Length: 140
Image (cartoon, rainbow, N blue to C red; front, side):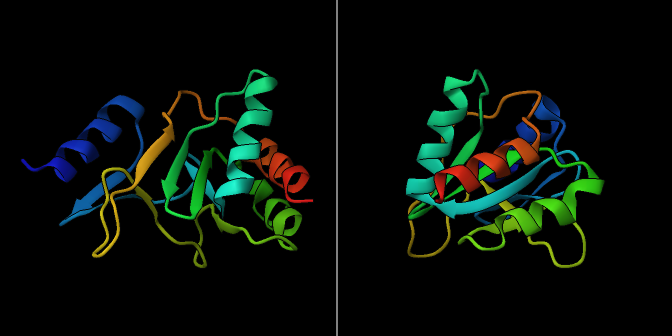
């Protein structure tokens, strides 16, 4: 078993996330179990610090100049969260037909360093609405 397969198994077994591995890529399918907001790294850093000050641990993945902030989204909040962050430079992954997979460490895309955890995954994940509101506050 290689590193990506081992990592995918760890995410599935330890965190209960639907995670897959192919080649050098490990990813999860976004949905209620885990969703994400893809933000510029400086915004991500401000959000992690702000939420930590409120006692909220926020798992974040570094993807070079961007961070993926992870949370759980209730299906009824999908449109509200999307509209909340729409004016900002934010990608939204909550499941559904317009969503994208969320790459996880140790994914390594050709020509780029491997993804890494900025802050490790915690259980339970914070509500994605709380994360989106913090992104909105940090992005202004």
